[in-house]
Image 1: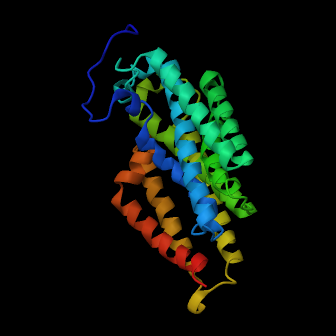
Image 2 (image 1 turned 90 degrees about the vertical axis):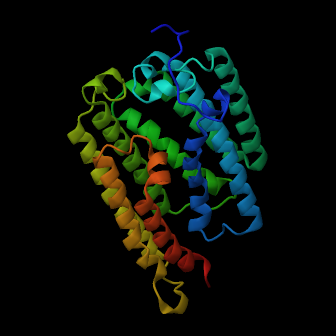
Image 3 (image 1 turned 90 degrees about the horizontal axis):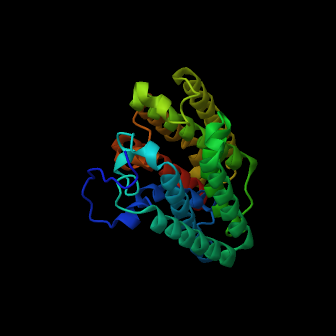
Length: 300
């Protein structure tokens, strides 16, 4: 298929340039609020404002990466059953305007980041460099590509802390690190199940097997549960009404991970944001997790 050909696309009220920035995937950027929540500082006015700016900055920097990826993966995306509908692959947005938009969003993100906090700016810059490196050549390296994609989730979680100078605990970092690896390995697993025999057409999938990816996301899930549990045990000093609320939150947290594992196993987690937005059971478990966690952290 030639670069200038246009494939049939699904109708959308959003303009092509905005859809190319994948606003639906910005839901992943709520991870910037994780560190302020874990520290019980989210409702401090300064922390909340800085966290909101971090969310905006990461939405812009991730949009820049999405645009770069879609320009580079143009031909491969046109062979994918779903990705062929993306604006650049479908011919709705040219590669030159996309490259200009990627530059503008990257510059705007870094400007916001360094204005809010130098460390936030550095975190955004590191994210951009790693993801561009992934797009250019690291996606072809097995294991390394998993680490590069999971680093994106990890840096989002770190950004919320550095934006307000919040100290990140060792357990928080372990949960963020292996939680990221869990989601990325699950994403790859779902993509392989979805594409089947066509998985070999994707450079990021051709070196993996389903059994190997299952091993990675299974062991990552185990480490996340263990690390989260140890974190809650450290926060038992504050127990409103004598109830170990943070420890209770282990139950819905674990069930939510197991529910997400079902989505992975069914091949439905190729786009994690779709799972979060559409799985009502998972959303319910998230609420049941946040209630005791919020009481344990914020009620004194």
